[in-house]
Amino acid sequence: MSIDWITIAAQLINFLVLVWLLKRFLYRPILSGIDARETEIAERMLEASRAREKAEAAETRYNDLAATFRTNEATLIDNQRQKAEAERDTLIAEARARLEQERKDWEAHLAQEKSKYIAHLHRSGAALLVSLTGKALHDLADETLEERVVTHVARQLKPMAADLRKAANAGTPAVVTTRYVLPDAARVKLVANMKGLIPGQKLQFETDPAQSAGLVLRMGAVHVAWTVDSYIEELDTMLEERLVQDPIVKVDSDGH
Image 1 (cartoon, helix red, strand yellow):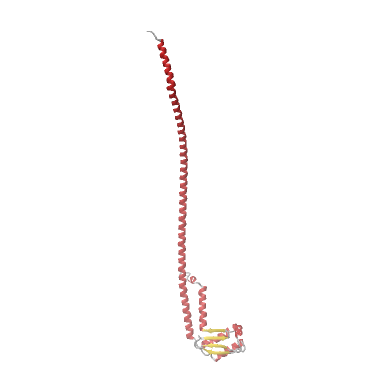
Image 2 (cartoon, helix red, strand yellow):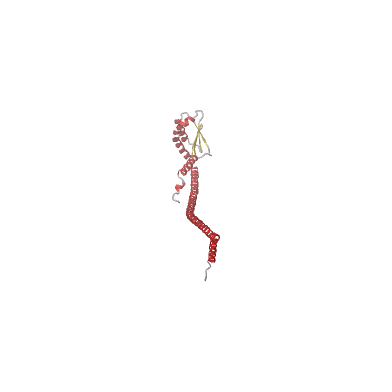
């Protein structure tokens, strides 16, 4: 069997030309495409890695913010709860204070009304006592009582001597008024006492059935009365002062 070297050489040349053509027009673009693809994939993987890192960082920030929010929320809720409890306690305290004040005011009002009522009873009793005393003295008064008044007046004129001298008028007699006619002995005694205090002063005796039992002396602008009514008025004044000085609350301190 003979070998055709020319044919073999031609086929070899054709193969080499084919290989060069494949490499030139097929393999190189494919390899370039593969390299470009690998480069693109690497860049995308890098971008994906960066995106993952960003996502992880964002997730970390979100978790931190969420934790901070939960902490702040818990703190805010606790603060609001404490504030609400404080406001509740304040309102309860204010309500209790108002109720206590209202109770005290009501008790004070009751005590005041009670005191007023007891004071009214005391004053009514005092007025009744004064009225009964006056009635008894008026019923029992007679000439003997007025004679006793003259004796009393003789002692009462001495402290009034200075005022009586200022009011005295030598030309005008002093007027002594009684309910009944004074006995001569009582008149003489009263005239003697007046001369001892104011020499030369004359006395004029008059009667007034409407006057309360006793004696009234008028000397100029001076008007002095020693009558049953005057003593009754003095008794009434003393009772009024007694009620003012001794409050009814003190009288009722034991609650009776």
